[in-house]
Amino acid sequence: MIEARGLTKRYGAKTAVDGMSFTVQPGKVTGFLGPNGAGKSTTMRMVVGLDRPTAGTVAVNGRPYAQHRAPLREVGALLDAKAVHTGRSAYNHLRVMAATHGISRSRVDEVIEMTGLGPVARKRVGGFSLGMGQRLGIASALLGDPHTLILDEPVNGLDPEGVLWVRNLVRYLAGQGRTVFLSSHLMSEMALTADHIIVVGRGRVLADAPVQDVVARASGTAVRVRSPQAAALEELLRRQGATVTSVEHGLLEVTGSTAPAIGDAAASAAIALHELTPVQSSLEDAYLALTADEVEYHSAVAGPTTPSDAPARATAPTGAVR
Amino acid sequence: MTALATPPTRPAAPAVATRPVTFGRVLAAEWLKVRTVRSTVWTLAVTVLAMVGISGLFAWASTTMSDEQAASAGGTDLPALLSAGVNLGQLAVAVLGVLVVTSEYSTGMVRSTFAAVPRRLPVLVAKALVLTGVVVVATVVAMLLSYLVSLPFHDELGVTVDLADAEQLRRLVGLPLYLAGVALLGLAFGALLRHTAGAMTAVIGLLLVVETVFSIVPLRFFELVGPFLPSTAGARVMYGEDTLAMIDGMRDTVSLTPWQGYGVMIAWVVVLGGVAAVLLRRRDA
Image (cartoon, rainbow over the protein chains, first blue to last red):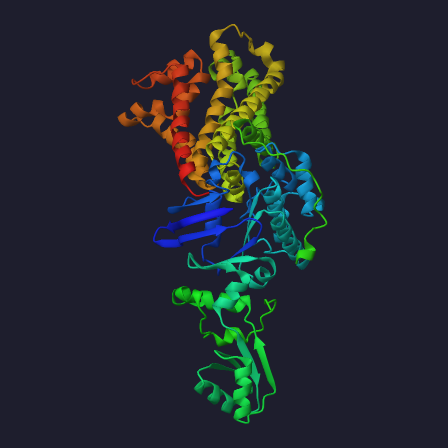
């Protein structure tokens, strides 16, 4: 469990984290989603006491990180894949970390095996690929068998097999009742991995809810309509108060209405429809809507918002929540 | 997704035993760090080799001089013979002291270190202890090898070993202590500045440039302050009474005893290290 209260970090005049309050619950994978520079990494560093908050507090499992007697037992963190001396082997790096907590060599061997580092464990870390560096970072995080895992962009640089492995691992760990806090800017990955999501932009929490709720709340359900008389239909639906976007010739995306209402309206006006498909917006859409202009959308999180970002919605939402 | 609940690689192991972080465990980790990086091992090996080589050369060269020349150069004096390479050795251990801290910052390792030991201060103290230990051991090894290398020339030079002689004993003990002091100075600068190049420039500039200027330029301010600079003061613990008298004869200010001089050097280490310790806890890693 991670509890942040009014967490703030300023670097001179720049505010990286601006009064964030949130709670990360055990037994779930909580995603931490936001564009680059939104304050995700800074927040995670403050959780494990590497950065001092300018204001506010953050507690892990009930107390500040530095007050735990065996911190690696409480929190395993992957904050930066390159937080390792490049001249030391992966095995020796893990042994150094283990030595501070009296963790046995057999556990070091175990995390090496778990993360698939075996073939390179005795090689110097300086020659590691980004993916191998990530695996070593994850091995370090798992070393103390922690109650809470904090992973900053864990799939960054991993191959598809590695991405799948991380996804399964974090879901397994959360299934054991552990707290898993995972940052990413890959929305598709979040949609597949996270149960709960905290969306941040410019250092502030924009949304803090189950993934499905974020999707549902951030943008209303749209309906895709294909018609040879698209222009006439567009005119008709506009008059009924719906928002209509022309995606391409003959294809409209309609929000603020429903598929039956559109079908009835078209029938009464004798307009032929070739397609009428309700489209649930993806997490990607929700995310873009939330972060496009976080000041404007900040208060709108609680209610449906008008999607004004038509080009973004027109892109195929790969890996979206359906 | 629930169907994927068990990654095949995770063994059904019992709970992992973790113990509280204690100073002893931090010390063990720092000792392991020093042993598992090539730069440390190389720096120490170079220190030993340089000191032994220079001692051997110095002993051989002294046999080619007249007796008076050899005596004034120190070739007939065991502590002087064994510490002939101290000027080079001190640079190597100063670099080692700097690297012990700054290599963690340059590689990012410090974030792993402070995540494991969030109180931070034990890390700095453990580093200082491990550094002192390895430098003292390396110096003693260098002294023993220097003794063996110069042994063939001892009879000709009239070198005698007399550990009952308080001055000789003090000077032999003083050499590893002085080098440990220099290494700790490097560590303190490393912890203060956190950048390899900056810290090396600071400590080597102090040892080679600043202290030399203070000791040779005849300005009153330099004469008053110079004796209290770390290396000038600390090195007195290695010098014989004759050398000390000669140094003090060049100026009319203070005359520290050998141990007072070493105390001044350690005071520098403590003050710089203290400032570094306060900053260590305040700064972001």
